[in-house]
Length: 331
Image 1 (cartoon, rainbow, N blue to C red):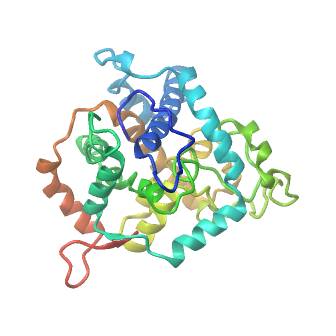
Image 2: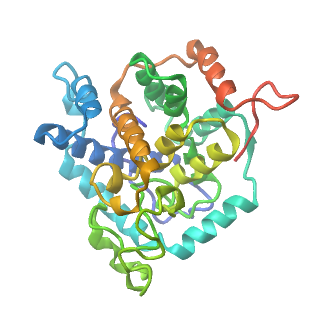
């Protein structure tokens, strides 16, 4: 989660595979967050927010003591992300998602520890903006520290620390920004009206497929969220890494996988897919999401002072194997 900044206009003429612009990715990601922050603010104001959202809202960037001018207005943010979502909605097909998952399972892109991955993300994104006010590690620590201050469990704190590490995908296998960031949604069934800009799915061939355009598509009511195929991006990528290589509890995995699934946890869509387990997972995601949205204006954390504490959490939930002092993760 990056702090508010002036949006960089990506150079659309450049060769994406020759130069993957990390700052432009973060600019898009921040604009997406701004839209979701303002939506959450509206829920607080109209009385439909969760208690967690209300509590954190009261001490967030919207507090009277903080500088409101640094945060973008809802309509402006919507304008910035609309073209992004048009591309995402046209290209996130069942065929693409099957290929992305097959690619994920059949090759290893890198081998790094969690802290090395944080440093790698730091280098890849911040090298394009030497004047940025916070490093990526500091961004990650902001969410974790906000969660820690509220006395949440250690696994919850660690989830805040690692939840955006999947953005490394942008520098490995992605085809653009559209298969890394943005709100997520199921593929293989009708695109729901709860998705942001639902009209932009017109160009997606799945919207005209006789099976995929059906309300339930390839799924059955009550099938459970574990069995659905969510649009591929940094959340889904990190979820599969953590599911296979960590001891994080189901609630943490749900926070990682579903925190961008706004059509479900915030707009109330896709409830027909849920089973009994998903009720608990939904509560966990709702508890996590305010920290993802509102921690961007918190005080600057000191990675040097905090590293020892968080290394303890990392080694607990990503336990080193024999001969390792830190678990080397297959990315």
